[in-house]
Length: 112
Length: 114
Image (cartoon, rainbow over all chains, first blue to last red; front, top):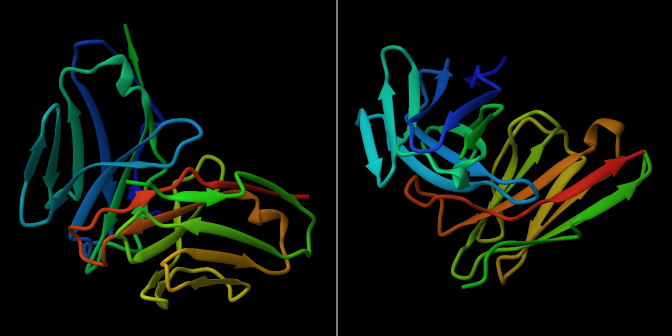
């Protein structure tokens, strides 16, 4: 039973355009959501997070939107750059920063 | 500051053997979490250690065990290895267990069980 789902295994975007990565969750107990980026042969790197009391959090080119009623969150990257090409993992938690539940990831390719 | 380091980077073991993976946490971090990432999957939580005590565990059998040392480094031990234990094992450290303490991951140990 996958509680965090990233239904798009891959996404290809042109440099300068917007990248939108989606994530759905089923467990209504989740109250904290994170996005991690992973390059090959490296560990995941924290990107941005959002608490369930907010519906938007922005950090530079990265914005995360949370729709609690739909149990859906999305990561927007504007403008996309070739260096953004990586696997992006959505993760969720409740009560603590540990026991993160991850999705399977979406491979983003930004073409020059 | 030194990041999270894991050793070894790659390891090949035979079914039934035992393995120990090691992790040095980032400077100033007192919490270590271990995750298993199977091929094509997201990382799955194994357990967390905070100040040398286990502070939460995922759905892994008891043959997965761990330790945290006074310098906050950590070990993951797996006994009676099975083929399905083949995966990337990720260690992550954080400056506490609060939600605003993001996990900082190491590059992982790739374990292959034959």
